[in-house]
Every structure is written in structure tokens, then in C-alpha cells.
Length: 250
Length: 302
Image (cartoon, rainbow over all chains, first blue to last red; front, side, top):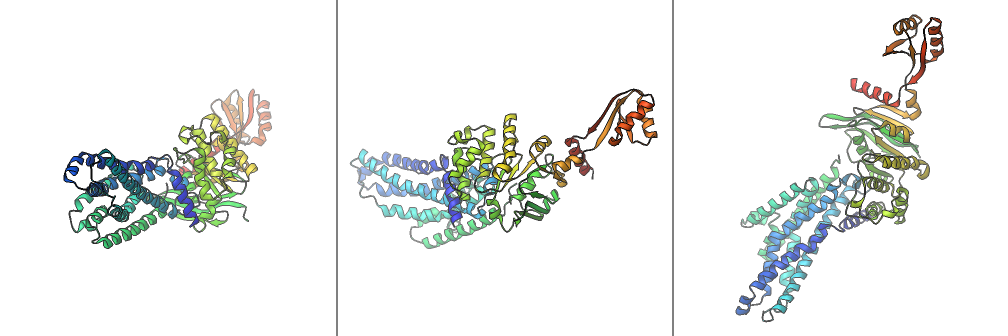
């Protein structure tokens, strides 16, 4: 366990000055800016109708992030993290250190998940901040107390149900050295995921559809989605780790 | 405590049915600088990767410090530093940060980073980003990484590759000092015989994936063949004379070559007594390069 923590520490150190780390701020803030612009544009309508601006703002933020931005974010992050080793052909020196190989694989996965969850925290904080700015710009806009629960609970569901997609994308990024393979795989999976949510069967099982399904379903079927995501992610991580431990570094 | 640091038994690696390394049995003594010599594609890097556990042998065993690599990988790698081909560095990090990564995994004290930076002469550049480094500086930083912690063995794959002449000299002098100054055994691969002659105490010669020679530099030098080179007038008549007196001789351009160097004086006397003008007589030996080429060629020809 100590060795795992040491390897995890080094993985965190490698993030210094990387685009992967910046993306944790940039990706969710782009989403926040888009939603801010959309809400600001429709502010007059909302004022006219006297509707609370928070619910649509939160709903759209969660849905667009989950459907589009998050899969791209995961694809990019896993590719960038794998690229740290692939670009400089660093595997040969990293794996010639006395750390069990599984610690390297799992550390990188933990870092990816942490970055995703950190991006979610930025998204929540950014959305709240942008709401405050909107209220300053449009004092007549009806914005009651920020409904934390309808925001945080879906984001928690998304965070958990995304694990299966993250574990698979992590495996792909480490398995193939080429950025193109990892990026292509992630983009295709995202597009299939968008179409798959329209199918009741595929949408309930396809790893890239699980997060949006978790959002749209609400509490209904949440246990099953969580179970599929967590068990699936554990199996995918275990299989990926097994392959990584056996991999030859030529 | 064993004196043999690296020991392999019938080590073999086959890629897609093609043997890259065949039945190699290495023995590297503690405190030596062992040069693993062979032309490009001979199997040096493959062997090194098997010694570091990066590739799984198709057959045979690897033991380092008397411990089997399969069962004691972590213990062995904690005592073994390596630099495989080009140094593996994170260009967006500083030299110090690059060293922090192996230091942390090795659980070495932080002061160790200063120690290895001093050894490779990079103290003043330690806070600079690696992407600003020259290839020579990167190579030295790679060596510093290999040095961190309590390393007793350094495995260096073509450590002077890509360096300019000054960088090569620097690297060689650094490697030469390692056993005496730091008590480490060095196993380095090279395809340059001149490099091997300058730094190594022992040599293993690899050709077509097979070990064709293993021993000390002195033992290698003993394999050099010597001959007497003779310059005379009337070469053909001189050749006939030498043969008639039982000396093995042949013509090479405008010289005669006799293989019995012990008889150089007697040959000279015989030629003069027979009325020849001897204007050149010397004993010459194969260069190590010629020994190497003969050995590797013999392996190629089967």
C-alpha cells in the first residue's frame, strides 16, 4: 500500500504544468460560460414569465456536460495522461523501477477519476458563480436559493456512472501508444452513446450512455445503473491491469 | 554474498518465430565494467530488457545478485539502475522534478537528488525544464536517475548514443569512475569496440543473438592473431624459400606474411643468407576490431 501511495504521488507530480491539469478548469468553465450565455440571452423571457432561472440552468448544465463535454473530457484526459509516458518512451524506465506494475496502472486510473471529479466540483462551483453574476447583471431575474440538491445529486450520479467508461477509456489509452486510437475510440464511443440512449435496452447498458441515463432516470433504476457502472468498472480495470502487468516493453 | 551480479542461463527470446537472443549464459562479476558488444540488431537491447524484466524470456533464467528475477523483481530493481537507449524524461518537468519521481518510488532521501546531480554535473541546471536541455544533458540526467538510491548495478544501453565527441568523452570518464568511486558494477551495451576498449574490464560479444565470446579484455586481446610482415625484392621466390623451409607464408600485395612470429629472426636470417634484400620486417597483430569481425562473421557463416 505504501508503494501504491508513492507511485500515486509521482503520478500527481507528473501533472505539473500539463494540459491535463489545466483541462480540469478549462472544460467545466467552458460549459459554464456556454450556459451563462444561453441563460443571459433568455433572461428577458425568464423575467417576463417570472420563472426561477436556476432549474433550467442547472438541468441544461448537467445534461450537456454529461452527454457531450464529459466524454470528450475523459477521452482527452486519458490520452494526455498516457501520452506522458508514450511521448518520451518513458515506459521502459518507469517499469524498470521497483514498483509493482499494477500500482502504475491503478494510480493512473485513480488520477483520471480524481481529475474528472475535480472537474465536476469546478462545474458546480462555476455554475453557482455564474448564477450570482447573472443576478448582478439582471437584478429582476428570479433566482431563489441555489437548489444544491438537484444539482449535486445528479452530478454525484454522473460521477459514479461514468466510472465504467473511464475504466475502458483508460485501458484503451494505455494499451495503444497512438493518440489517434484513443481519441478515435473515445469519440466513436461518445457518438454511439448519444444514439444508444434512445434505445431502452442499449441505453441501459452501454457504458457511455449510463451517465446520461442516470441523469434522465432520476432516482428510478439508479441502483442498477450504479451497480453496472461500479461492477463493470472494477472488471474493466482488473482486466486492463492484468494485460498491463503482462505487457512486454520492447 | 555472491560475487556474480548478473547471471543468465540459456537465456532465449523468440519474436514471432524468429530467435532474437539464443541460449545466452552471461556472468558478470561484481565491481566490473562489463561491455556487451555486438552489431546493431544482435540482440543487445532485447537481452537488457529481459535483465530488467521489461520482456519475458522465451526460455532460460535470469538471476541478479543471486536472486531469480521472476520471484524477486522488486528487490532486484531497487538495487539496479538503468538507462535504456535514450533517457526517459518528462520534458515539462525540471531536472530535479524528474529525479523526484524515481526518488519517491525508491523511497530514497531527498538529499540523494543533490548527490546524483553533483555526480553528473547538473547542479546548476537542476531547476531548468528538461525541454531546454541538450541531448548530452538529458543523457547525464538519465544516468543520474539510474544512480538514485542504493544502486549496486547499472545497466546502460548504448549510453553514448547520439552524444557529441565531448559528451562521449564525458560519459566514458563518468562510467570509468563508477566502480571505484561508487562501488557499482556496470553492464553496458555498445556496438563500438573503441568505446569498449576504453572503459570495460570485461566483454561479452554477441552476434546473431548468440554469445560468441565472454571474458576479460586481456583474454580478448590474447585471441588476436599475430604474423610477420616482410618486405623483400623478388616476392615469389622469397615465398617459395619460406615454404621450402617449412614456414607457413602467403603473399599480400607487395609483402609476405608469415604466421610463425617466434621465428621472425630466423626468417630474416634465412632471407638475407639467400641473398634477398629485406627492406621491411615487423610483427603485427589483429586489432580488436578484426578479432570482433572474425568472431561475428564466423557466427554468421555458422
